[in-house]
Image (cartoon, rainbow, N blue to C red; front, top):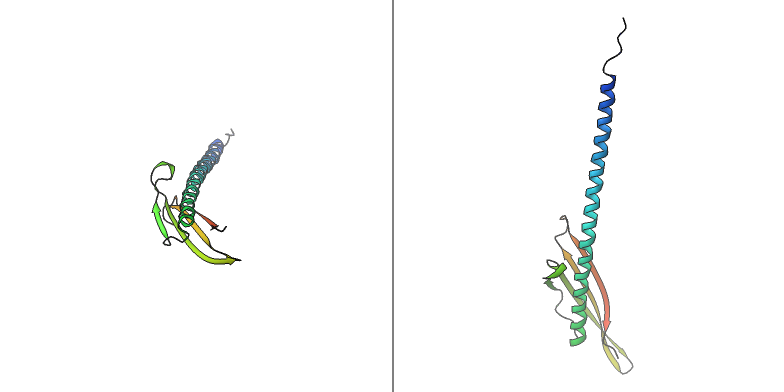
Length: 135
């Protein structure tokens, strides 16, 4: 009497388990990547806000004094969403004369950052602007 082959269903089940486990691992990887991308996007926006606050400080400082501040100037922000971010602001100036008017043009750079380069979660944004108090 002929017996049907045994073990064929076992091969199918093992294959199906491998495929389902691979899909589950892929979905976990995609989910983790999406979460990290969202987190870094939020942190990056906060770094931009920190850089903007540094730029506002720099513009107010040079227009009030008509001179560059000590460059580079570094300060840490506290409170709110940008707590823990560091701002580094720098300034350079050039003198110009147009007719009877002499004035300075200030080139400002403000960098907002969190964490150290190469570390997970490190974000950094830089803003540059030219400012003058010319008449």
